[in-house]
Structure formats: C-alpha cells, structure tokens
Length: 160
Image 1 (spheres, rainbow, N blue to C red):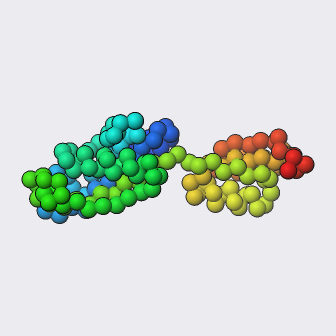
Image 2 (cartoon, rainbow, N blue to C red; image 1 turned 90 degrees about the vertical axis):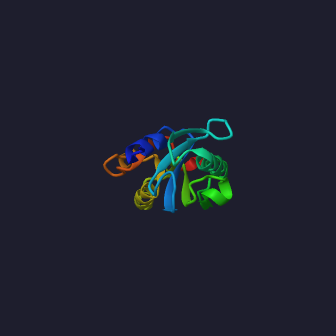
Image 3 (tube, rainbow, N blue to C red; image 1 turned 135 degrees about the horizontal axis):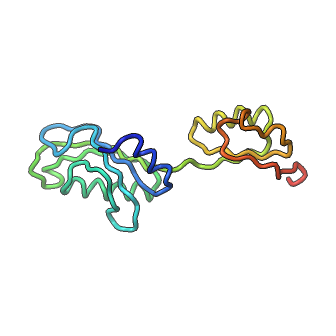
C-alpha cells in the first residue's frame, strides 16, 4: 500500500511519475476507492509501477493514461465500465484520478526586501522552491526567510 510518505519520497526524487487513485467504484471491481498506484515514465509505453489499482486490462488502461498525463503535464479523471469498455468479467465501473507528481518549480527572487518577504512565504506555501538573491547580506537570513532554499549575495542592481 502506498503511503503519503512514500509519495513524498517519489516527489523528492525528481523521478517523473504519476499518482493514480481510484476515486469511485460501483458494482464488482478488482479494487475499491482509495487504491493507489504510481506509474513511472521510464521510457516504455506503459511505464514501471508501484502499487496497484486492480490489475488486468483496467490497470493496463490506467498505465497508458498515466503516461499520457505525464507527457501533457496535466491531471486527468475518467470512468470506465469494466465489462463494456474493457471486456473484463467484473461488471462494475471504476473512476480514476491521475496526477503527475512534479518536484517543486524554482522561483528566484531578486531582492530580499519587504515585498520579497511576503512573496517568498506565499510562493513556498504554493509549492515553489524559493531562491533569494540580494546584494544586502544582512537581509539574506534564514530566520527572515525560513522557507527559502538558497541565498545569493552576487546580485548587484547595476547588473540589470
């Protein structure tokens, strides 16, 4: 079973992957809502996996859609009737949400004044990796910017 900690480890690894979650089921299905699988973009048409959403033709379809979702860098959501659409004997329906797992995007802030302080906090909470650059070393303090990933004093206003 995939845990939140494992999913966070995959995100931190910067390996291109998508999280697939069964969000709804009806009738007879191989797995129920909450089942999770990670599909890795490893260069194959289906990608390597960790976890399972049910196996067989359904899992094959989810893997194909996960690779497409990764290529487009967009999440997707779909419902499949297992017997009618995939020829499975289960007879139920399953809904899946696929979310590409991406590492944090970098945001470089030039200047560490009062506006950067608010922006860095907001950006960090919004999922960005914040980097700060300012010629004023006294402003580049981890206590002042606890969410910043790096600091640089090499920026000079005359460089603009």
